[in-house]
Amino acid sequence: MNAPSLTSRRRFLRQTAAASLALGLPTLIPASVLGAAAPSKRINVGFIGTGQHGTSWNLSRYLKFADARVLVVCDVDRDHMEFARDKVNEAYGNKDCAMAPDFRTVLARPDIDAVMISTPDHWHTLISVMAVRAGKDVQCEKPTLTIGEGKVLIDTVRTHKKVFQTSTEDRSVPVYHRMAELVRNGRIGKLQKIEVILPKQPATAGNPAPQPVPPELDYEMWLGPAPFAPYNRARVHFNFRWIQDYSGGIICDWGTHLFDTAQWANDTEQSGPVEVDGKGTYWEGGLYNTVKDYDVTYRYANGVIMTCQPGNPSIKFIGTTGWVGNRGWRAELEASSPEILKSVIGPGDLHLYTNPEGEHRDFLDCVKSRKDPYFPVEIGHRVATVCHLANLSIQLGRKLRWDPVAERFPDDAQANALLTRPMRKPWKLEA
Image (cartoon, rainbow, N blue to C red; front, side, top):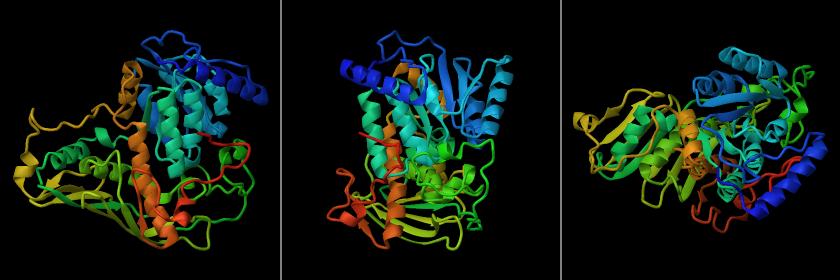
């Protein structure tokens, strides 16, 4: 593995020692930080966040790979953590899997090469940054919580020369890879418009009445850097998505999937739109406060217009000589002509990088090769930015101009003030 610079190592040694003392944890320094040799072909992994998606999708995938070994699982919900531990032990036929209710214990272990982070969104960037600074490669669920967080994450990953995979499967799903290559290779002529449809939000606003915290949950740690709020079962686990303190609602959840295909096909995956005009409504009188209904229009510098509305999750690319897309998540590819559907991407055409075995296999391969995975940190940040731009335009109730180079709203102090959010003490995210 590539080790940080001597200055970075010294800084890390001081920070790790101080953090360990504050936590009452042993001061364990990762071998990679000390300049030790690269890990063996088997990659030791720690799982941080073992809820439904963390176990049924992420953990299940990792347990299939002979070159990965899950050594520890971590969750603030003891029931979730014990379920994940038992799943690991069953797969390996032993009782060796450790449990850690505090993710910092995982990061302090020198035998952990990489972490898989499947927490709520408000923890994604903070844990990722701390993991990278602790010498770990990171696969983390999407998205970031703010645009400012994403910029810190990029800087940290690149400074410490770590592998980071933004965790979605879309780039390995044949239908989305296929349509992006067709568009990028001009099979529909010059791209003019992209129509994105995301799912609708849940049908109820959630009961906000405070409830007793269940004994298996460390609720204070679940909240972490988010503002304090009384416990309610409709607030935690999957339902965090509908509360602004922890997530960006359906636009950030599903938008990270379909907007990525849009940016990929539009050749703007390292950039973004220059204008966003969003309209929408919010839940009222309940617990949930993310956007409920939405109608968003983006404009790119190349003239492409992208729209986003609720319905059956779908995407369509319209060009000067035809269109291509699908109706429904992972649905069959459709096009304006059989010729487009049958078109062959030949040796002289542009071939977009993917890994048919998925994001987990791709990440492990890149941990070994030290190359960027198919959804690296910059592209994950840019896709999350598209989502955040929609929410900010709806929140402010007006059209916003965006400079994707400076990553600022030109001459708009009110909008720029929303690029970051404060964290509840003692948690902080520093560049």
